[in-house]
Amino acid sequence: MTLITDFGWAGEYVGALKGAVLRVNPNCRVVDLTHQVEPQNLLQAAFILENTYPFFPPETVHLVVVDPGVGTRRKAVVVKKEGHLFVGPDNGVLAGIMGGKESVLGYEIKERKYFLSQVSDSFHGRDIFAPVAGQLSLGLDPSRLGPRVRGLTTLEIPRPRRVKGGLAARILWADSFGNLITNLARREYGRELDTRPFRIKGKGWKIDRVHRTYGEGRPGGPIALFGSGGFLEISVNRGNALNTLGLKPGDPILLLWR
Figure 1 (cartoon, rainbow, N blue to C red):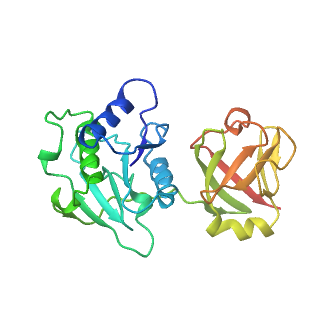
Figure 2 (spheres, rainbow, N blue to C red; figure 1 turned 90 degrees about the vertical axis):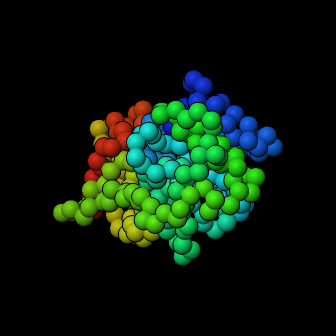
């Protein structure tokens, strides 16, 4: 089983979540993908899930709890795709698995006998999602949890815009190294950026080409490269772009053709 949350490591939340899984299946192997999703950042959680689940074997259960609408009328769901099972709120955190050739099957989690005996209004991760994920790890058929769900909630990544002389893009988030992930996808803009001269400028710095690795360029200098997730990243060689370049998640960036 894998876990993605925005809980952080302070407090009891991660421990309680794992305890609720292990209470159902003490032999479950639990892998922490991350608990450092920016609070309530559904898009980041969906991105992380999309870029990690294919590396796990079929029949893995993936539990994603980034749930700003906990306690509201948003659905709790299980989604089946490519032999994997995904458990979480139907608020967009599962949007990253919706693409591809294979369709997904979704089921609403309604059957209360699989929940903890007392369900709080504010911690469905512990009281609903975790025990259900534990049951799924034991082989429970997701169809026993509730009715089919169609039209699962999706998210749209803010798209770059073509403007006069360039591209207007946006910083989506920063990773744990301080690399700034933008919304410029390799599949759409990679060839153009590799072959067409451009410039990105900030306060006291500029980038004028796409690099191949994080170690290129001078130490302490800014670089741009397409990261393993397929999006252009603004980085600093042996440094932290978030702390040094004057940019933060949500900021616009302007890429100008030269």
